[in-house]
Length: 289
Image 1: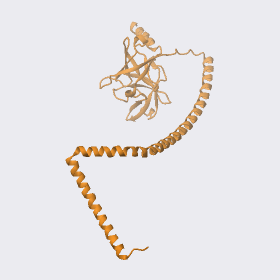
Image 2 (image 1 turned 30 degrees about the vertical axis):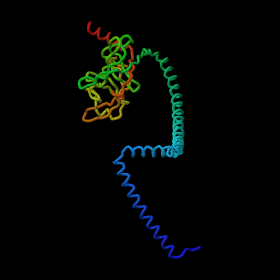
Image 3 (image 1 turned 180 degrees about the vertical axis):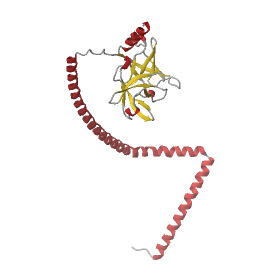
Image 4 (image 1 turned 60 degrees about the vertical axis):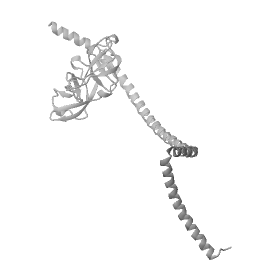
């Protein structure tokens, strides 16, 4: 049944008045709440706590599906990452197996050649692992203190290294600790080979992070990226220990960036190649002459 036109007009007017009254009521209610909050903060805090307690269970229930979905998405991402990592590991394993086969072949060939030449093998090295307990690097000295000394077989002159390369040499050896002179120290001098050509030079520290090459026949013989290893000359260090790579060649100055970062050294290996004793004997013989 349709309403009369006059009644419809009255209902529209009443609806408009209610909307205006509701708007004014909300403004008034807001003002009243602000006044109450200023007058009685304890009551407002209690009301706020009550509303929070009432809403918290609802929010908790609503958040559970979101947490489940988030965990599900994270599990999918982790699964995809694990699959990619597994594929990369399989490829790396395959490459390592190929290198293992090549290494075994070269080892057999090397043994055969050694037997043919009757080569006298070099003495095998013994190692002592120690922890770095102090770094005394400064403007005038570059050295570290390690937790191994004479009681562990550490002697002055022994080689100190990490898995990355050469660290330095034992400078002083106490009973339970030792001081290591780093390759960056100004007193460090190491005979080295440069690049694949094997040009001889002396790696000299200057108390900076990058030691320099001295007595290199021609600076152009070194290029950035060339690997630097010990040469074994003067029996100060055994040959072939990695040290670093050429980082800069500028007007005859050749700088080397060591493989071992001093600030990241935590554990080192002190190697006894028997060279310290040989060097001491040679020095003693020279003094007698």
